[in-house]
Length: 215
Length: 203
Image 1 (cartoon, helix red, strand yellow):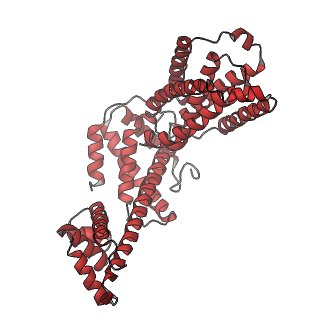
Image 2 (cartoon, one colour):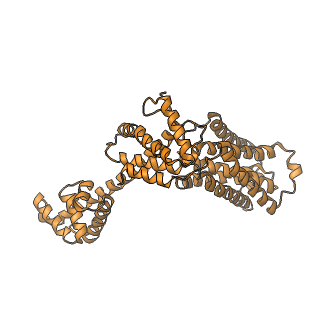
Image 3 (cartoon, helix red, strand yellow):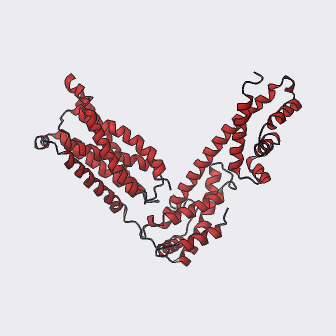
């Protein structure tokens, strides 16, 4: 094994000036904007839902879309803070993330309980899997941007960072699919747009984060 | 300043200030400042890493220097994540903590793997009873020698040292000149060879 002195001399010889990374909020904003633009372009390519103007009058649309976007922003912010060693995670941010995810799931359950049998069947309609695939694809796009970008940081908790990235990616994916899919069926939106991709995204994010964010 | 930001004990504010200045100069490419910074960081972190090892029940001589060097490498590789407006010590300790945990996880995994190897070794020992006359200690040893004779030179030497002579992995590594991981792998392979060769014998 090399002695400490030798290692220090070697590191000093390798030293080149580095530009400190921007503040956590700005650091997180860059991949967030890139992902938003990428997903918006994809939605435009796949076509925006025809009943958008009718949908925006419904509170469900806002809970689904705006709720997903807020989750995305919160998760990316938490990820940004986590990329800088020594910075304490803000408690309100973690609470908001957990609270909002739980609230969204409870909202979906509440909505689904009031549905009739036909609508319930529609939730698992084979066509619905298209939305699942689309949400997962949008999320994968965001995840790719995120893994590339946040590796510049130095998270002390790679698995948690991966989980947060999974949550952020799925939330943006869900918001994107809500802009494309014309369905107003709560169960379909709950399962195919958010919950099923979320489970996959959290597991995949944690798994990949352990490897991708290890330094 | 004590508490959260100075897990290694009390850190004087002037130390924090000095290290922060050295870090800023290092980010600008000042090699002399960087040399001083890394030397000081090593001295500050040594007791912290040792205490962490002791708290976690790890013998400090078992990897302390490795961890310290990994922390220095971590600081070097991720120096861009230090924000000049931020305190230096919490940043440094966060990197040190991460590297200690990472090291312990890796060590734990290796230890678990070796426990598995030892388990296999016990299985191999059972094979030594394949000869009905080999129930006594000398008989078992003789049978073990017969089994060892089936192995290639390197595997035979390593297995004899580790199992029959009872040497630890590091002692066997010193004696043979192989690395510790080489000893573990060779032991594992030798056991596999024996198991395949003597499967079902004496049952």
